[in-house]
Every structure is written in structure tokens, then in C-alpha cells.
Image 1: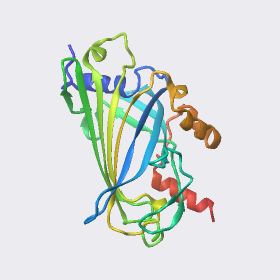
Image 2: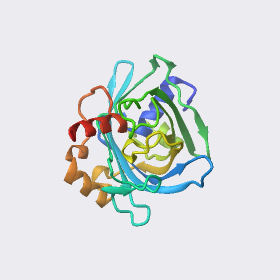
Image 3: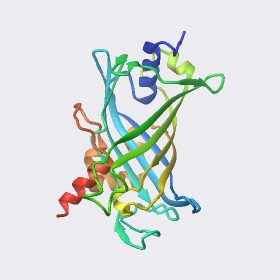
Image 4: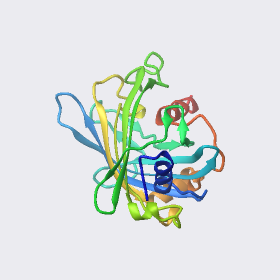
Length: 263
């Protein structure tokens, strides 16, 4: 019987949901909206987004390594077109859009890691439905200090939250014949202005709300416009990594490299 209070069961359930117990390539896709949240002002829809994560889990001593790269595209909220430039309604400046090209975004999941036994909160949300929750609170020195990047940095501290929910079938988790199981996701993010928005230290935040799922057909089943953009600009994102490397890329570190490349 499945007992998600046991780290072994909990980790196995998460790996089956998030990836696969076998080192096969797995794609998660998401779609949603980004809103501005400014004190004293009405929240407004700024972008639609489409994105995906492509990765594989490899078993290692004591757990798994998750080898991944990740893409998100900012879209016109009216037309759904992938943006190349954006007219900032707050600054009235036309700016180039820098999409999310994060390679790698690798993770290690251990039964007994630096923070103790592996344990994701799990909630029964129906006779056969489970929700695994992952709340990540982030606060660390920004890769873009304000003294050096006053136009592109809101603060010397990157502060945000990434809130994930993974919805799965209990029967699927308990089925030992299944290495990977269907999974739907909800993703909410609260974070600072994106560097390429050139908002300097204006007050406010961005609120993301997305839904998505593990795609049975893999990369080939992603939306056509997403695949076309990837294949035109960075085709390496058509495949998952095969080696575990560090450091991970973020939108902030990628943007820093983007600025350097334009000098």
C-alpha cells in the first residue's frame, strides 16, 4: 500500500509524476498569463506565456538526478503571437523581449539530503486523485546588482516564490508496471520585474498563473508555434541533457550574458 509519509514512497511517487523511474525523455508543457501587481493600481494582464521543460531522471546513489533544460516564450495577450519586442506601458519604451532559455535547470532528489529525508506534502483531492505540493521561497543576492545594472535591476536581492501542484492518480502511483504516470500541474509564481522590461526600481511585482501537463507525445506534441521558434533559434532545446552539469541558468543569469554579448 502507498504510504506517502515514508520517504521512499514519497520520492518514488514524485519521480513517477515529475519524470520517470527510467532515464527516458519527459516533457512538461504549461500555458498561462503574467500580470503586473503594483501598489495602488489595478492589476493588468501583460503577457500570455507558453513553455516547457524537457528532461530525464537518472538514478544515482541515494536518489535521482534530474537533467533538464527549460523554455518559456512571452506572447501578445491579444493575438498569442510570440513577441520579439514589447511596448512597455509603464515607461513608454519599446524594448527587445528576451525569452527564457535556461540550460541547465538540473536538480538532485535524495532520500536523505542536506535538509533531511525527502518529503513532499501530499493531499487527497478525490477517490483516486492526489496532489503533491512544492512551495519554493527564493531570496538570494541578485546576479544583476543595482549599482551595475540600474536600468534592469529592481533590487540587490532576488526575492520570489514558485508554487507548484502536481495532480496524479493514486492507482497509477501504486502500479509498479508504470515507470512514468500522467500528471497535470498548476504553477503560480510571484517575482520581480523581468530584467529586459527595463523597469529599474519601480515598485511592483509580476504574478504568473499557469496550468499544464506531462505530454505523452514528448517534444513532437508541443504546440506548433513553440516548436517552430525553438527549431529556428535554439534547436538544442529539442532534446533533454545527457549529463549533469552546474551551475543552473536563470532568466537573470541568461540576461546578464545577453547584455555582455551585445557589447
